Image (cartoon, rainbow, N blue to C red; front, side, top):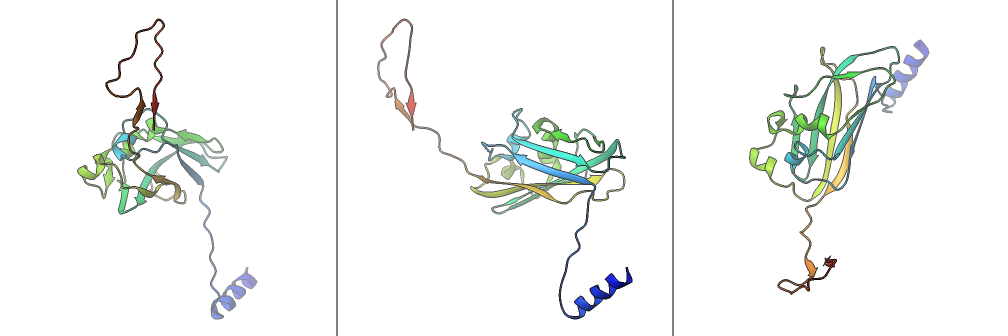
Length: 188
């Protein structure tokens, strides 16, 4: 131990920088699922899987560890984060070695306007500007507030596509009545 400390001091005196990584007991893996919604309000109302967060407590001897999540949304001119305590969120309990999958239904309260900071009501209901966005999560101990994971992000390029243009049938075109009826639609 003393030998290691000596080498660290020598490296520091020589101007060599080094970094020690910190190990956290919880792993957080967010995943955005295409097609990406460009309205944050839609993540609070949809029942389709648009975002999944997987949590894993690495300590196999620990069970029923209560955690809370912190969410960050960054990109193209916005920086939004969740409040420290999320109104309407169900408690999250982790058991060592058993992954927990949170879907849109579980994460819905994190996207409600009352639980977001750095966003006006007008911005909340408008589509995001086209660009690259990161949705990140961190896990914290529910009681002590101690950070239990590193900040982990899912990155997506979000763009609001134009609506399709109908090519066929042409507007106002008369379609013959047949039995059975078969109408071919084509759009760009």
